[in-house]
Length: 143
Image (tube, rainbow, N blue to C red; front, side):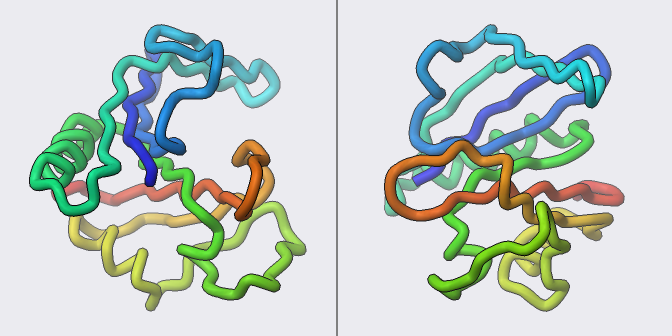
């Protein structure tokens, strides 16, 4: 199950979901930079949210989303099958837009009008087992 974290930089803030824990060598306070893209971020907080039936899970996720209310975008790392329920699907492009009538688009509309939602296939670190993707969502105005 994913965890949520808030990564912050001086220009933008992004809320992201990662697999159960931070990658080795990337503790809270770790700065990530991509000079070519002109992007940098610092991991500022991590909250475990894997207890599916725990009431604390809902509160923690809600809190993370509220903390990210001023962020430019939400980023989630999810199993590809959660977005595209076809185990034989192979991406031919680096990214695609999230289908407007999908469950996920409806879910994200719970927080306001969605400006854009994009699924990235090549950015999630490879792991053992199922393919993972990054889902990036921008709202016009978060509610």
